[in-house]
Length: 231
Length: 234
Image (cartoon, rainbow over all chains, first blue to last red; front, side):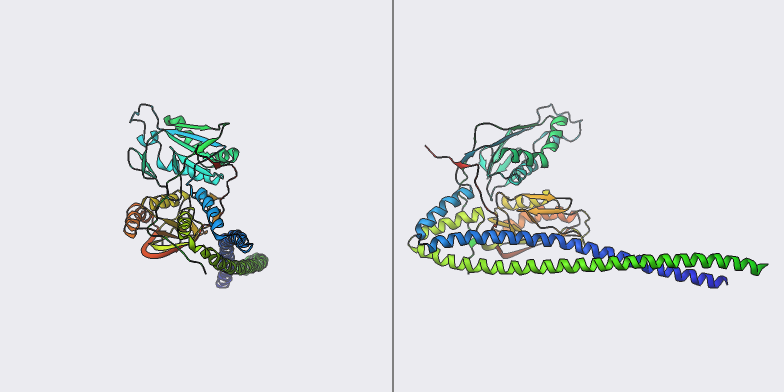
C-alpha cells in the first residue's frame, strides 16, 4: 500500500515537472519574440530612411530630366554640401553652455581629485544630447564639430580637431532653443549639476535672445576613402 | 484496526490526488492556450517581418535604379571634373555618399553566449569607440550599417535599445556590433587594440579586429537647416 502511494506520488511529481518545463519553454518563446521586436523596428526605420533617400534622388533626377544643366545643378549641390559638411559659418537662434574646472582648493582628502575637472566624456555627452535635440551646428571653443572631430583628453588639455583646448569650454549650438534645452536636461544636465554642487565645477546654460554663431570647419582631405560608384 | 486506518489514509490521499490531478489539467489547459496564442504571435511577427523585408528589397532595388540613372546625368558634367571631385569630398564629410577603402572591421559581442559579460555595451562605450576611431584618423565610420556623421546621436531608448541615427541597433539577449572604419590601417588597428579592445575584453566581451577593405554605407538621414543661416562675409 505504502509503495503504491509512493509510486502515485512519484507519478504526480513527474507530471508537475512536465508542466513546469512546458511553461518555462513558453517563456523562452516569449523572449524570442521580444528579441524579434528590435529587428522589426530596425527594418521599419531602415525602410523609412531608404524611402526618404529615394525621394531625394528622384527629386534630383526630375530636375535633370526637366533639362536643368548638370553644371548648374552640381554647383547648387556643392553649396548645399558645404553647409551640411560644416564648411560654412552659420548663425541663428541657439544656446551657449559654459563648463569649467572647479576652482575649489582641491583638498586631496576629499575623494577623487578627478571630480574637480571637466572631462572629455562630459563634452561628448553634451554634444551627443544636443544633436539628439536637433542641433544644426555645434562648436566647442570655436572648433566646429564635424564627422571627423575627435574630443580627446590628453592630460592637461582636450584635443578637438587636432587643436589643444583648455577650460573654460564654450559650447555653442544652433537650433530650436526649447528642444536643445530639454534634450540636454534629459541626458546629462542633472549629473553635471551634482558635480557642480559637490565639487564646484562650473555648469552654465545661457539662452541668448540674439543669435549665436558657429564658425566653419576646415576641409578634411581624404586619402583612403573612395566614393562607391552606383549602378 | 490497522486496515481501517490504512483505508482512511488512502481515502484522504485519493481525494488529494484527485484534486491535484484536476488542478494539473486546468494548468495544462492554460499552458496550452497560452502556447497557441504565443504561436500565433510569432507567426504574425514573421508575416510582418517578411512584408518589411520585401519592402526593403524593393526599396533597395529602386534606390539602385535611380542612383544608376542619376550617375549617368551627373557624369555629363565631364567638362568640369573638378566640381564633381570637390562635391564627392564634401559628401564624404557629410556622409551622403557610400565609400570604400582600406580599413578595419571590429566585431564586438557584448553579452550572451561565448562572452563572460552580463552588462550590455553602453552608449558611452560606443561613443568612446567612435571617438578613438576619429582620433586615429578614420575617414568614415559605421556601426551596424549606420554611417556615423557629425550629427549622429547614440542614445538609449527605454531600458535596453540603443538608437544610432534613430535606428535601433541592439538586441535583447546580446548584441553583435560590427564597426567599420576606413583610414590608415596601422593606426586604426593600433588605437583600437590598445585603447578599446583591452578594456572591452576585461569586461568579458568578445572582440575581433581585422584589417579589411571595407565598404561603408551612406548616411540616410537628412540635413535640414531651419534655424541656421549662412554668415555672409562682409
